Image (cartoon, rainbow, N blue to C red; front, side, top):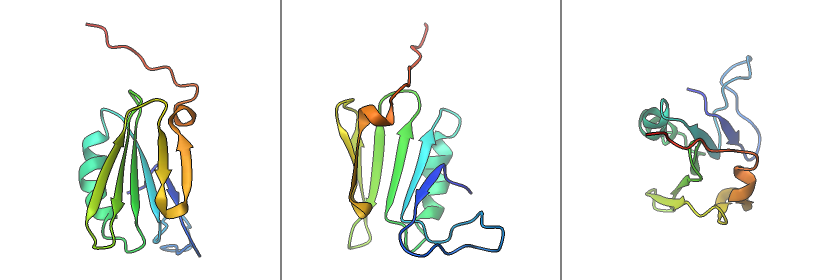
Amino acid sequence: MYPDAVIECGEPEMEDDRFDTLKNPTVIFEILSPSTEDHDRGRKFFFYRQIPSFKEYILIDSTKSFVEISRQQENGAWKFETIDDPRGELVISSVELTIPMDEIYRNVNFQSEVS
């Protein structure tokens, strides 16, 4: 399984000499679409949680201004947060980075559903 984007802290650990499988991501991003959302929220998240270095999972909706962050707590439990305010901010705690929602969705025109 390949995520849409990752942040890695420290020295990258690769699976092999093809350099296409990072074994120690800290933050994983997935861009949700109607066809991938169930897989990204379910099976992929299950397997990603087996990675010891993995701390935050960020799901970015492609159909509306909506981001979900899952953060691993010190006790190993996962805490979930959602951001649906277009003026809000995505805080990536493990790397001390804040990204305004309007930057995440800059130049994105959402299609309205036609009934």
